[in-house]
Length: 205
Length: 76
Image (cartoon, rainbow over all chains, first blue to last red):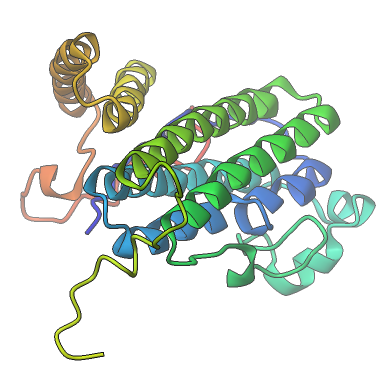
């Protein structure tokens, strides 16, 4: 289970609403490389991960991604909370507004709704960890792109923190992959799938 | 809050490092040190501002967990 801490992992204090920034930052909530997909990717993959250390890594990083989702949502909330109708119309935020007012709803920058197809849980330790490493890099690129588009230092500051965490997670997943490979046959890492072939089925074939 | 966030983040980061380097003695000592600092920072914060977790709520004749601002609101 989880326990809620009444604090953000990194502070968010934005004094000026900006619908244009909110429209693109929301992709890190519900987009293809966003924090919702990240948290569910790792937290779904961990159950069948046979190596305790790596299952612990998936749990810790998956948990941190939920804290990052909260930071992204706090940014979007503070950017949209006090928007005037004129600002909503001028920024083209009206299509979002008509469906969600100024609530948070997981979608990509394009408006595409969140979908579980943004991530995989393949049940093969090497496959999943390689996906996880790619996912961290894709999220890092997305933060880089957001930082190219956004000037307000109050918004950039938490985005820079989140970008840096993608790099740390990439590093840790690389170490997780090494730990998995250390358990496998070094002459052929693909001889077995440790998430399937090491089980002990109760009966026959 | 800023101090508490800083010290908590140090612990988050060292714990991830320890997950893949479980015998790194420097990191283990660092974890112990910052865990003590975090406990102290939490205590100071809660004494000054209020509970961080629901089971820290001081129970009187009214439930007060929702009285403080939520963390996603702009502070100050």
